[in-house]
Image: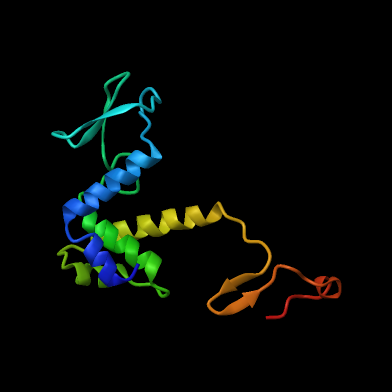
Length: 152
């Protein structure tokens, strides 16, 4: 998705919140107290309530957004930039682009996202021929090359 499509799909805070709720509902919400997977959505409280023990949890609970008061739109913009751009960007640049006054919450958000993206990548093992930025790398090493030291 390019930046124009992103702006069309997520024009405001409410559209980002709705999309995030859709994703949470699709993945399922588990109660922290009794591990029940059945919940009610309380629209007026903007929270899930467990059908069994009636414990409540907010939409952000148990996610990377937990304990953050930043708008959903900030999170969506940061996620889009982290996944759609080849290069990296600094938290200071994101703060400037978002027009946010304080650096610390933006820095925490970016670092949380980088951390969970790194953990996600650990779950996958690459095999065979893999294309990276128009180059091909192979995991196979010939028998005569195995005994030699690595070329740097």
